[in-house]
Length: 413
Image (cartoon, rainbow, N blue to C red; front, side, top):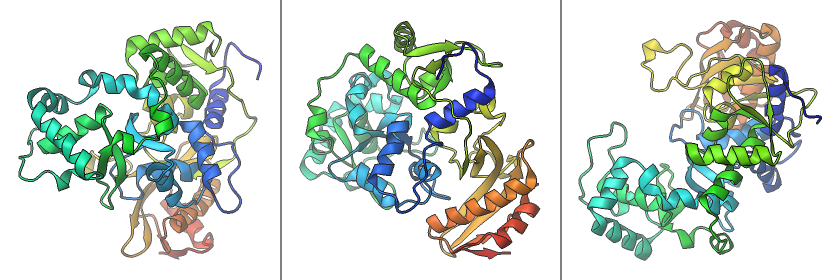
């Protein structure tokens, strides 16, 4: 595309959606590993989260871009050889394409500067415990923390975590790259093993790049995935340190890999990746997970889509504006609605506690498209019914639309 000095917000939005894979063709038939790799080459990593009210977070970005696919494909890529993904701290806990393993060794080598304080304290104050835990993994891995915790007391200092000292030692070993996630149990607990038994040998044999070379490579990948970005979200993609990030940006600008541009309303330096594409139109109609890289950086989401989006899981129920687990609905190149969803697996019903229309969206068009998407989602999740929305300004129109959009999935009034 010709390189402009100024992009409109609408152009920046379409560039972003193309970079994130929303203009790539959706598979018409069965989805296979080639389709999975196409998305992973776009995103480079997928955030993980333990919340399972609808579907585990790492499965959703692929669904949003490919439609219904077999989740076993992602499990195979992450946990069966030859592995194409590995778990590590990329953007929070993440599944990262395995070719990037060398680019994160700077974080592993400097874990004391980045890991949580409880892990660092265990490593510094109880090195014999860390060594014993590593020995257990070497002798018995793959193994969960529960299998070697024995009677070691848990910390009571951190609400929601309360990890035992063994778990903290394991996480320190994980952060430093000495152990890796071999797979996950059905309850989502990591099974740890020695890294040399998890990461492919040809990847481990790649020479470790300097930290600055790693920063430069990661900034370029983040810019490629975002298309156009201001500095905060460019740095946030892989959670990079300020100084290394600033130098990497300067080098990439000098080499014309990043092209400075202006977007109205965006403060601070903004950059366009030199290979970014500007599509004429985006024809998406899909739900987006709260943990999707498209909306990771909430200030960017507001600038791009004029949508103030916050996840309200940790907000007391009485104070929530939209609901517990709310997914924005992408229609075309804009967010047209947001829906609070829950998969009731015991009854086979997709529950809709709330549905809300975005101010600029067309009510009838949105309700029709969202009803079709909810039936598609329910089918992918193995649910047999979609319940009527319980509240929200879109609840009535969506209820009417759900009655007539039901291929393969029943509607429950």
